[in-house]
Length: 219
Image (cartoon, rainbow, N blue to C red; front, side, top):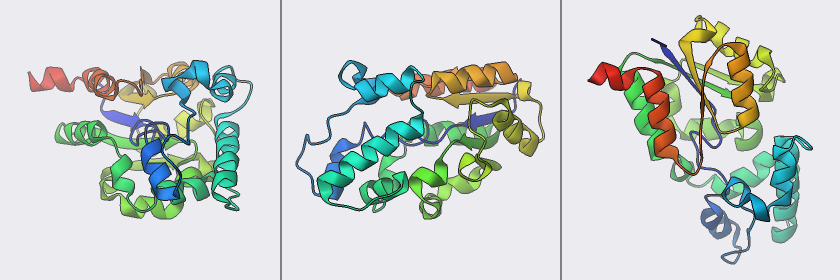
């Protein structure tokens, strides 16, 4: 059975910014309903998201544009995505962490599963001090962040970084990500992929735990 769980951060461990528009609007002093882009929750109404999904722009390009738009709304001089995220989420970061993620992390720990994060932009988007406000991150054996490595998923080297750091073969790792391009990259690299549907977080984590054999262990 696999013995390592590798999670993306944004969208998998944390709720997406699409899901927390109400928190962002309150933190930024914007009227309710101001932020109306919904990404995967209403792709038909988010042309920029569709461009990203079609690989016309990168995920970073998407969030640069949204950061610029929100900065203009609040009269801020933001230059990085982390400026937006800190302003929108910095006061209470625990509010945006998925309870389903915390439950899955605990289940993995209880079953002796090693834990890792493989993110393209953890500190780039959230800021380095964000981690200090989330004590559960101390339970992770490995955190690989392309903010520093510059090697982005779905590059095969990104997956190799996390498996090498864990000291396990790719086939021993269940990898969970909400972006299908990263799931395909993980599969090509030999990891066991579980596509995370942000619209169904509970079911997505159940599939990941099942891939780890935790359901079978418990029974």
